[in-house]
Image: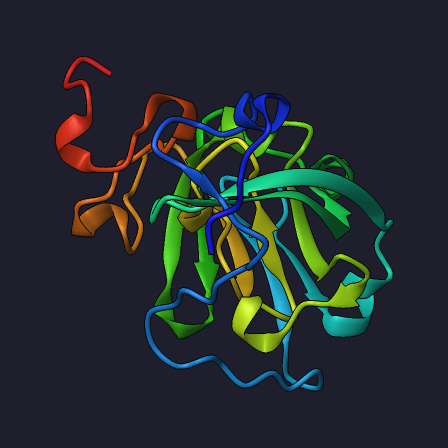
Length: 200
């Protein structure tokens, strides 16, 4: 349901978005089953040493919380979500990138992937979250782990994350090869690949 928007809130809505109190479930395919005994999280690719965490090890990493807005490419926005999890800033204290690392491919259960430039990924508001608004994420919203990239459209905030692969070259992810914009900045309405600048 669309909400009436004050002038102050309207300034926080990117072009073409409407404000809602709901947080709809949008996924392709079934929700993966989570088994903490078999779950792991990996960091691989252009790194000096690949990392692997089991569920307990990952949950023992430093925890943070932040408030951020969420903008879905389907035109709804939900403001002031409180996310809890591991900030990418903290995770990267354990990672030594090779000089050629320029992109990140996010691998998820269900064969989902999405891609980010290293600059977008290392932004200080990007995190790997397991809670939202004081509660564990529901399985349909990505539990046990989803990426949160507030400055980009929601499909870049991938659900059910299992690995981060650092690469020298960009590789489009699941939705990016199906016609969605490779960058996905909501303030520039970067929704679809036909909008991309061939010079970029």
